[in-house]
Length: 268
Image 1 (cartoon, one colour):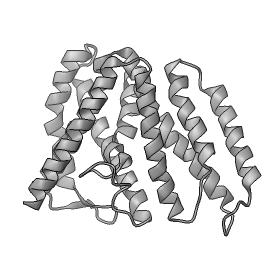
Image 2 (cartoon, rainbow, N blue to C red):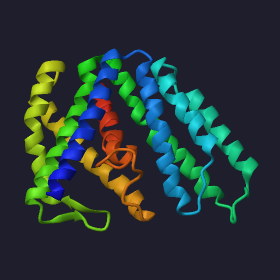
Image 3 (spheres, one colour):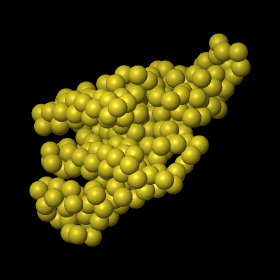
C-alpha cells in the first residue's frame, strides 16, 4: 500500500513537470532560458546546501551571475569563450577579495572549485537544451522522453525484479536488473521517436542513443546520489512530493541532454 501511494505521488508529480516542460518547449522563444533560470535558482540552492553541510561556502554571486547569463548567451548564440573567460576572472577576483572570509576557517580552494564546477554542472550542461530546441521541438523533446522512459523502466523493473545492488553505499535501491532491463524496454520508444523526428537516424544510431542515454542517466543519478550521501541527505530538498528536489528529479537530464546534442552534432 505504501509503495502504491509512493508510485502514485511520483507519477502525479512527474506528469505535472513533464506537462510544463513540454508546453515551454512548444512555445519556445525566451521562455526556455527563463525555465532554465528557474531550474538554476532552485538547483543552486540545493547545491549550496550540500557544501554548507561540509562547512564550505561557495560565493553566491560567483555562481549565480555566470549561471544566469549562460542560458541567454546560448540562446542568442554568443560564442562562450570570451564570456566564460571573463566569468573565470570574476570568480577568481571574488575569491581573492573574500579570502579568508568570515568563516571560521578559510576554504579558498574548495570554495573556488565548487563555484566553477557548479556553473558547469548546473548551467552550462543544462543549457544544451537551447540549441537542441533550435533544431526543432521534437529534437529537443526526444532526449527528455527517452530519459524519463528509461528512468521509469529502471525504477519499475528494479522494484519488482532487482536482486543485485549496483552501488549499495551510494544508491541502495538501484539494481543491476532494473538498470539493464531498462535498455531493451526503452529501445522501441527510441525507434518510434526517431522515425517521428529524426530521419537521419538508422538502427545503429537508435541503439547507440538508447545505450548512451541510459548510461548517462545512470551516471547522473548516481553522481547526484553520491553528493547527497557525502553530506548525509536523503533528498536534495522537498520541493516536489515523491521526488525530492530539482536535482533529485532532473539529475539524469543534466548529462543525457548534452550527450544527445553532442551525438547529433557528431552524427552530421
